[in-house]
Length: 64
Image 1 (cartoon, one colour):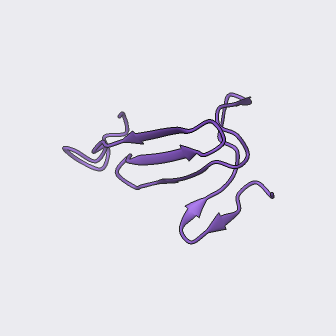
Image 2: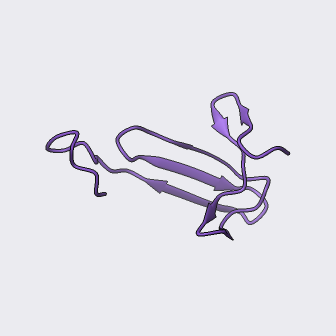
């Protein structure tokens, strides 16, 4: 699988943080403009959902 690949709206790369692999290569996820995120690692049977509103009170607000 090529990093950055998409399938029906889901992103399919292995998710990394500071070079460390967080999810397996078979994981899928999607992020949104307001800071929302859903990621599913089917190999490890793990799901993460983050619901946030980083644009409140204005779009200049960049912290979650």
